[in-house]
Length: 127
Image (cartoon, rainbow, N blue to C red):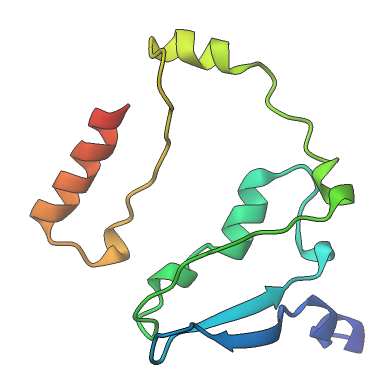
């Protein structure tokens, strides 16, 4: 180990402002910034996993919602887009004229077996 490996301050997210939600008790808006070095260039998966990952599953939080996400223009330019367009995906799925949604239902969300099955069914049914 070296000091360079154990000094993590430059990689910490920082809450730079907290505001109460108008008209709501015990609800707040927190403004959080993360160093761009934390994120792999061109990886939407890495970006969203890093920001929202498992935080929504923390039992200490009764409610949490991501309201806004601002990405530096220089980082946006690292996203090259998919290797092919939406038409290829629609052709593979034979789904046209509507939005497409992908999701992962995780067992650790605390759903009963019946409700877990219902959530999976609804996701699959939605296409």
